[in-house]
Amino acid sequence: MNFQSLLASSLRRFHFSSAVASERTAAACTGGGGPVVPTTPLVAFLERVQAAALQAYGGDGFDPKPYVDLSLKQNLSAAVEAFEKIPKSGAAEAEGLAAFLAEYTSDAEADLVHVDPADFVDRPTNFLPKVESPAVRAWALEVHQLWKNLSRKVSGQVIEKPDLHTLLPLPNPVIIPGSRFTEVYYWDSYWIIRGLLASKMYETAKGMVYNLISLIHKYGYVLNGARAYYTNRSQPPLLSSMVVDIYDSTQDKELVIASLPALLKEHHFWNSGIHKVTIVDSEGSAHTLSRYFAMWDQPRPESSSTDKETASKLAKGCARTQLYRELASTAESGWDFSTRWMRNESDLTTLATTLVIPVDLNAFILKMELDIISLATAIGDGDVAERFRKKSEARVKAINSVLWNAEKQQWFDYWLSDSDASKEVHQFSISRQNQKTFASNFIPLWIQPFNSDIKTVDKVVESLLSSGLVCAYGISTSLTNSSQQWDYPNGWAPLQHMIAEGLRKSGSEQAHRAAEDIAVKWIRTNYAAYKETGAMHEKYDVEKCGGHGGGGEYAPQTGFGWSNGVVLAFLEEFGWPNDRNIECSESRQVKL
Image 1 (cartoon, rainbow, N blue to C red):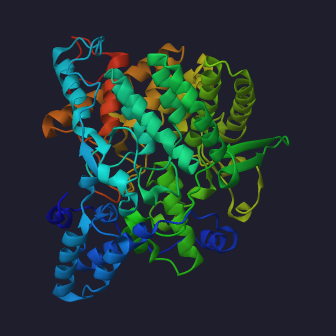
Image 2 (tube, rainbow, N blue to C red; image 1 turned 135 degrees about the horizontal axis):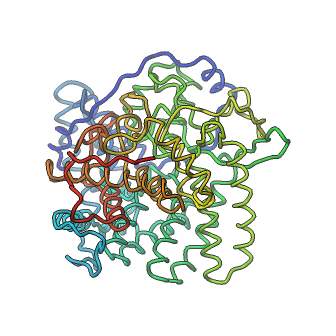
Image 3 (tube, rainbow, N blue to C red; image 1 turned 90 degrees about the horizontal axis):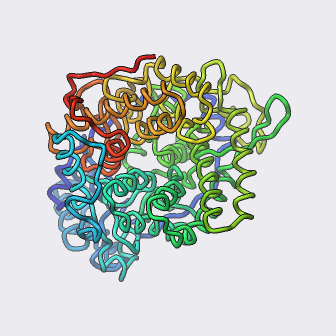
């Protein structure tokens, strides 16, 4: 956006209560800490620019992210010298900062340039063959066209002078999520790729995977996003799923050969050091599971002003430092933010994400292990396949022992106790399962070991359908209306897709009906919102036909990569018959 648009852009901002749980404060001061990956000098300087902009132009609606996405026209030392000369108060500060930004910086859009995907065609061969409805097919082709709008490549100036940019140079064109998210994001990429595969855009999909592999080779893990300020955390690990799905569509063994070493590195990242947790069950068996744990303990640069405001409720020192780590760790989870990670549902300062063993993360890592077996087998690497067969069997046992609840027929996040925060080994207690209802409780259905037992699947389906999560137009993220974006009444494309696809893969007829019901509801509300607004949205209100979601620390976004991908993936899998109404007035319910 240009500078005027930057100043005019608005976000909803929230103020949180000042109290923090006393036990969490004590834990932060005695058992907190962890590694920190330092930021770059450019990011640190742009945070100063961001703070000056907040003082000069801020207030309700101030968006901090665009300021750390700026690039420099001159070297950093020259920019710093000029910045120091800006008056520090009043109208002169606003005028001086505006002049500085115009002379020394460029907007983020200049770092990425539009590019037509080389494999895009207006009407792909065999595109969504199960879609019979002319209206739905016409809409699906419009969604397909959105890939051209979201396609970018890194500009030459980023590659030539990377020190002047927070955008990281990537070798291949990308599909971005859209709106304020002008860079690649890790877990978004999986559902974008699912849509690209439905659109027969195999080369674009492969290029995105090679980009992520390049990040692993440089950093040891896939970053949250392709920005210098994201080097201290990852996101839900779905690279192996991308590789497997592309391989299934293309049989490209070169991609498998290139991917496998990177996947082994990523698996090590999530199963060592701060991410690794050992829990001993009631029978004395030790289980290794994983958690989110960002390598950062300061305000997130892209949300620095927001994080500082949140932390201002706490005493200075270790309590704030620990909160900053929790904020970054929650961003690593992709669920930023949700009552799922909070002790007090009304107080963001009670985030305790680093003490949570998440159901979905461990399901993703199990899938990574199973994918590595499949990929290693495809290229004849029996040693790796056998090693990961043992790892996957151990993780299935760990998930069943620590996260599964037979009475509730769900999987629950497991919370470590504050008193054990610094211990290497933790003793299991059923009371540490968080038995509140979240869509993440059902994500293991996506993974083969948990969707292959029909009897268990049927019980889990009954638990899902009676949970209150399945609403008129999709699955709600939680049952708590907290004003956080990963809570009720918001529904998110990835959650709909993983649960529905897992149910579809099972052998249960009841699960198949539930899967189709979820997909139909989701497609209908996406269609209604698109017809009303002309856009696909980042998230949706699952209680309203065509209602787009809200809440959180930034304004609702459009574009939108993973929403496009899930709609196309659902239409490819479930189709749309001529006699099914696409309008929201018809509501097909599951019959148990």
